[in-house]
Length: 300
Ligand SMILES: CC/C=C\C/C=C\CCCC/C=C/C(=O)SCCNC(=O)CCNC(=O)[C@H](O)C(C)(C)COP(=O)(O)OP(=O)(O)OC[C@H]1O[C@@H](n2cnc3c(N)ncnc32)[C@H](O)[C@@H]1OP(=O)(O)O
Image (tube, rainbow, N blue to C red; front, top):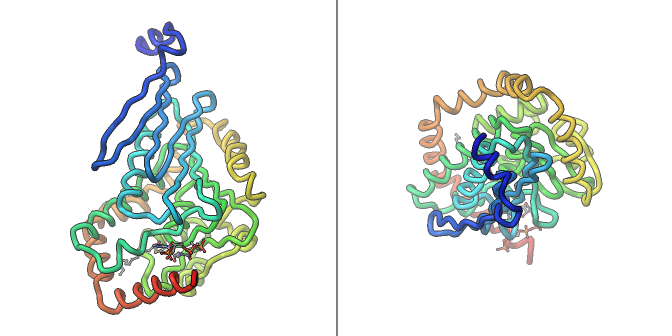
């Protein structure tokens, strides 16, 4: 409190600071404003910025070409989410993409194809941690989806409290079976919690990718709007959520979600082992190889 009061006496130009942090050999540049306690972070993969007036942070993913979730991207996401979580003045987070026509293509398949075991384990643990952080966040989290969002992209969107999606020819869903792989139990649980058991059962087996209208109909997303409006619509919706008593809302969220998170907490090591065994099977490697090939051939 005393620090805040002192900072308030500083002139605006005295309050800005730039910090450079080096992390895993990469450089994060921070532009912070001491008065608002806000901190903006940009990495190769994302930008986190906080609007100090509203307390709404925007987390924009921009890993080319398709926001594929590799180890580095997931690490950056964990750091950004933790930073927003720990920033007292931050109340809500809009998760979006800076790439056209893509929210996220999900896990970077190259992390799973012909992997090095040590990195594979770290990759999966970092994904688990990112999901637990996002799904259990104290913040109001809204996904602004202006593009495709298969598999891991869909998981991230479902882990938010509310989803705004652009109308258009974009697809969202857990399509793992189309790759010859199986969505892990915590992906499945998150979908069951979002659209119910029967719809999840059907969608998972078929690897169904929903168009925007259909996603709205089954409750996979909550609102549709024009592509250019998704972030604005997400921010407008956020202001409604931020009017609710924060403690009551957070306790309600945790009452609904904590049991699902705890299931992974107690099985985290086993889940890593299961993943490693499954992914390194010959048949799975073959299926992933074919899928990667088909993606490449699609481009011609
Ligand atoms: C017992 C069980 C225990 C444990 C569980 C075990 C198993 C593991 C479960 C793992 C869960 C997996 C989750 C996932 O997220 S898997 C990833 C699923 N993602 C996809 O299927 C999306 C694939 N991509 C697409 O469909 C299209 O790319 C997309 C997103 C619609 C965009 O289309 P477009 O704009 O036309 O772009 P391109 O297709 O031309 O792609 C450009 C470029 O990117 C490459 N690429 C695309 N997606 C991925 C990806 N997910 N990973 C890696 N690379 C990707 C694509 O090949 C192109 O590359 P190029 O070299 O040709 O430029």
